[in-house]
Length: 184
Image 1 (spheres, one colour):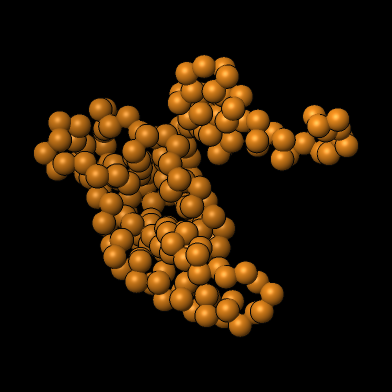
Image 2: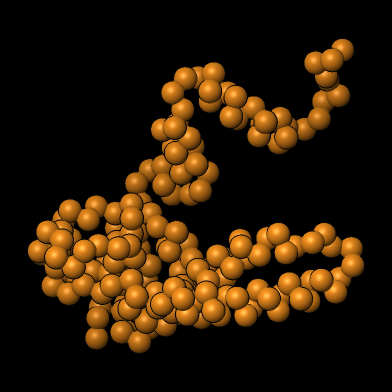
């Protein structure tokens, strides 16, 4: 029985791993980061095979697209097939992670930093009614997708004029129309 498991993703501090850890990212088995680790669970064990998840996702998405094609007024959604495949395969892997956590009788699953797997696991857990606690040490700015987007944008922008150039189209489309136009 495993009481507490700390999961580390690509944004986590992999330099100071301790105790029982689960990796949601690739790390060399002989990495110096793993020196203080009591036991390490690898991505394939936690999330299952990505190829297996993709096969399941492909089956689900192809059936979905076939059914949607029968509805006449919808535009062709086949162009979204890649996005559907990606999201469904992530959901399959999150289901695998949830099942693994329940099988290992984990009572507390802790994320050391923000990971998209945290959000996915929260959603899956509501469907499966799993009883383990989810905890996360999420720094300010990573708590939700809006803040993460702003932080990422601020790191990629060098000048205020560049920031305005990127945000202006978004702001214009989200503001209510006032009837004012610059062409007057």
